[in-house]
Length: 181
Image (cartoon, rainbow, N blue to C red):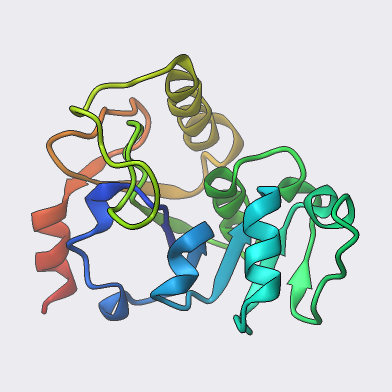
């Protein structure tokens, strides 16, 4: 089963999300502009923001981010174990695997500091700005190589994205062609 996990990296900006096929898992601020099949959130502020919004989709969240703020989950909110110790992007991959993914396309997983304009800090000269991004790339690599070696991963990238050894890449331009729009 095909899943697309949508991060907030700048490389996903030119991709028309409404043209994507399959099951869609998004994270954090994406809910402002697009309603994926599943939304993952872990940060305290994001949990509170989504809870207080009129968003009515399926939300997967970090339990402590909700309860430590004395908040109550809505009826379509879920908190499985993989949400507890991961960032929302990595948790979204675990969610897709948990839901039976055999193929996962990763959009907006740039592995550089920078997000889609309007979603947080802008890209800063395309370079990794702190050591946590090297760790994040290693985690993605291990997920593809070790944890979910039975899933066919593919990462949509632009020229500023850093490679991840065990995840094949497709350019944004070629990916848009594949969407046949």
